Length: 308
Image (cartoon, rainbow, N blue to C red; front, side, top):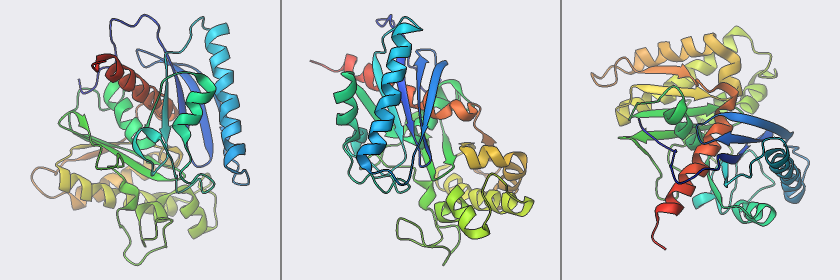
């Protein structure tokens, strides 16, 4: 078991979870056992300014707090947040590349202000890695990567049972591994990044088609590029398993995953990386909210165990 979130001193059992992506924000309630029992979502309107966007999220948060009390008979103990990056530690400030109106936005403090609850946050793909290791497809696995392929492309890496953090908490950003030399300009400033070639907006810009209506060739190409980036990480870090979620990957389905696996088989030729597998997130569209809850429970456990 890689990650455990049950603690016998807690009888209350709900985390309020927030999953913030480039096109929508989901807010829900998740139990100590990792069960999502309620949810709502709001669209991220690119025409909104920073305050309007937060106001929409705050309204959804208040709605779910009311649902917890009135419908489920519980008061959440914590708020866990999964947000597209980059960000500073514990989401004290966030600057998601695909939410341009938020630059150095003080997300954690603003959520504390409206809720009065302890707030703990991390990157969306790192949160997914926690969720997959907790109740998903990587349960019992000590070395794996989780990925989100959606409006953005992110990653979270677990090595020897520990989620990699990095110097600023942004470890795992596989979306900015170069997969097409001299390819499209990325929002990060680079060229040919996986996010600039395989994210939903990139696919639409390249093909003129919505990623919800892909051709077979688009699905194969996207899988091949993701497999290319994943192979580099498997070869670098000695990984055998990669769990992938996000609307693009899950929406493209078997065609995407078969293409990604073929590329992985071609490029992972070292003895230790041969046989590496890339699989759909077992948590499907619940992964973001369950991951956010995992971040919340982890933070609460750490707070309870730290010396006062």
